[in-house]
Length: 166
Image (cartoon, rainbow, N blue to C red; front, side, top):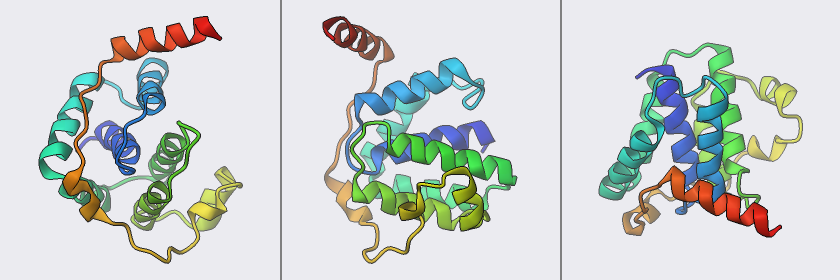
């Protein structure tokens, strides 16, 4: 798997791991795709909708497969920090941080070679994301969740209407 695909799958898994895909999270992915090279050469909407089909069909297995792909990826420290950055920004995109999202982040973090000090140097206010968990992540909850397809055009018009009413 290419690194840019791993970045997109990281964003998707972090947005879906709480059982809900918020408009703010989809808009963040759209922003990434329009304003930097992280998802270079990937048809974003089409790929995200494939991920939605896969998670709807396979539930928690999709998330577990992502974690396995991350485990075997040969990433530089800079690429690992990009994974951390994407995960944190996605988790915080909707201003509602679910415990399940932080637990999933910890699963991601445990697969990286970055030290806590390296992460805290970049994200000094994220110490809670690095503390040990008392409760393990419940992958079984995904067996009853179904996500809808996304459409960037609908979200963009919704976002514009929201701005006009403010």
